[in-house]
Image 1 (tube, rainbow, N blue to C red):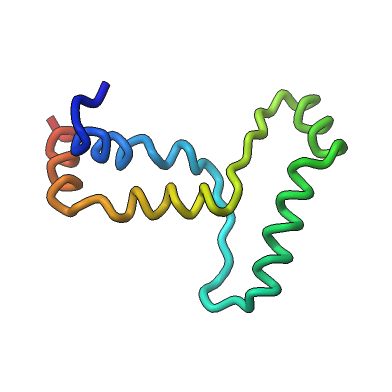
Image 2: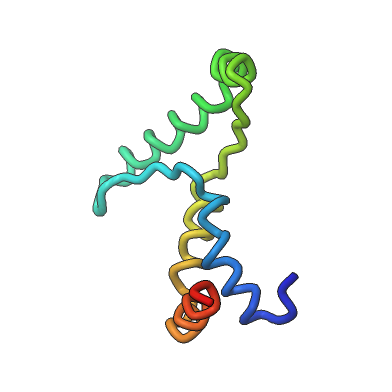
Amino acid sequence: LARNDDERKMLRVVFGTTELSRPFAAPPHIPAMQLAALRGAFWKAVHSEAFRKAAAKARLIVDPLDWQDTEAAFKAILSTPKALVEKTKQLIAK
C-alpha cells in the first residue's frame, strides 16, 4: 500500500515488529563462542521434529527468522529517520 520509500519506512515502524513477534536477546559483549552456541541451539530446537510435532499439536505456527534476518529487521526499524517516526505518530493519533 505504500506509494514511496518514506511510506514503506513508516509502515515498517508500525508493523515491522509483527515480523519479530518474540525475539530472543543476549546481553551486550557476550563472547562470540557463547553467542554462536545460543544461536545454534535455538535454531536446532525450533527445527527439531519433537518441537515441530508439539507445535502442530498445539496448533501453533512456528516460522522463526534466523539471527541475520532478525538483526536486519531490528536495524531497519531503528534506523527510521526521526522525522518519519514523528510523522507516523501524528498520523496514528488522528
